[in-house]
Amino acid sequence: MSRRIQHLAAILAGLALWSVAGAASAAITCATPGALGTSRVLRIPTQGGAEYGTFRYGPLPLKAKEVVLTFDDGPVAATTPKILAALKSQCVRATFFMIGKRVDADPALARQVQADGHVIGSHSWAHVPMSTLSPADQIADFDRGLASNQQATGKPTRLYRFPEFKHTPELLAYAERKNIAVIAADISSEDWRGQAAEVTLARVLERLDARGSGIILFHDNQAHTVEVIPRFLEALKARGYKVVQLAPAL
Ligand SMILES: [Zn+2]
Image (tube, rainbow, N blue to C red):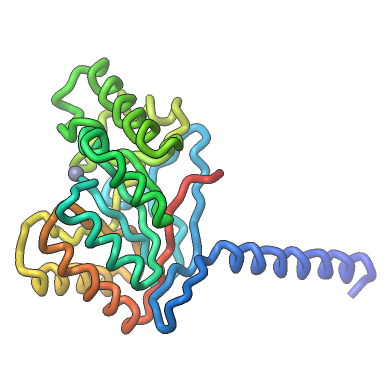
């Protein structure tokens, strides 16, 4: 090996060490022995927009056995705090796509979600399919949803999920102009069906095992989901999955 190549190799080794240290520092510290934990934070660039989630777009850069937990349709006082407690007990950090009008109704609960270390995205303000609105009304709803989050949490929102994942070309282009990443999902728990917890649990685990990784969709406004989440987190741990928190780049 020439001296020059040796030098290059040393630089590359240093970079590798640096990136490992960077990944380690991104891990969430957890004081609970044996908890599932959060293995890393995946920060995605939002400049010029981005779209992820194979229900509509391309996949996130996840490794095998990595899962991103997402919760839609909150915050709701009857259920969201119980989901938060389950996540906290396992030191798991998730991403919550909130409905703006529900944030307006309970901004303190939105702040609690943020205070627990979760990322808050927008799931529109009114939660109606965007295709039913005029382009101007779509943009008004989009901006209103972001404003509700900002007002409640004091932070800008950089992630957006369309109601029912049904995007429109107009609003997708607008999100790109506003530097907002649009997030769909890879695996649906279909917890909105309101079935018994074991039915939802079996379905989501079967889909996850078949795919091996991905963005999973739950709803924190569903009573049965409160029962599902503690058991789901235990199952993730038993099956060797790692939780990755999805966040916008700083
Ligand atoms: Zn929804």
